Length: 272
Image (cartoon, rainbow, N blue to C red):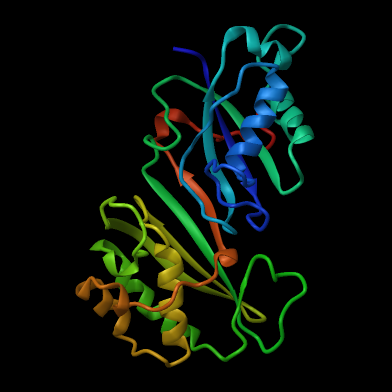
C-alpha cells in the first residue's frame, strides 16, 4: 500500500457546489485535488472525504485522506529527510483560494479511512434571532427576525437523543442509506445578542437531516407547531410530519471523531 496522509480542512461553503466533485462546477474536492496534484508534481491525486457537505454548507473540521508515492514526497521533506507536514500545509494553502484552508496534516497507516474509520460527526447550526439583519453573519447564520422561544426549542431537541429512525427528517430525493441514526448529544445554546447555536452529534446523518430538524424547531419556537411535533415526527416517519428545510448557510460540519488508536490531530496547533 502507498503511504497515507490525513488532512484536516476548513472551508466557507458559499462559493462551493458542495464538497464532492461534480462536472462543470466548483467543489472542495476538485480544488483540493488540483492543489495536491500541483504541489506534489504528480499524476492526479484522489482524496477521500469523511463526509459530504452540500452546496453552501461550511466545515471547520472536515477530514480527508490521500495516498502518495515515495517519489512524490521530496517536495515536503525537511533538511534531514523527514516528512515536513507543516510545509505540506503551508504549500497547499499557498495554492488554494482563501475560502478553503488546510489546518493540519498527519501521517497515518493504511488502516485509517477518513470516512469508514469515523464513529461520530458533530454539526452546529447557527441562527441569528434579532429584528435587523447582520452585515457580518449573513453567510454563516440563518436570520430569523421574529421572536423565538428558544427555551422551548432547547427543551424539545432532547427528544432526538437515542437510536431513532429519522425518515421524517430526510429529503425525499436522497439516497437509500439507512435512516436509523444514533444521536449521542443535542443542545441549543443561547450565546446572547440573538445568537443561537444548535449542536448535534451522531454516528451518521441522513441527507438534510440537521437542516430539517432546525426548520422544525424554528417553527416550534415561532409557535407555528406544537412542542410535541418534533417527537411525533420521529414516530410518524413521514417527511410532511416535520418542518421545512432550513437554509444551507447556517450549517457547519464542526468535527469528526475517530478511535483513540489513530491519535488524529492531537498536536495540530503547536505540538512537536
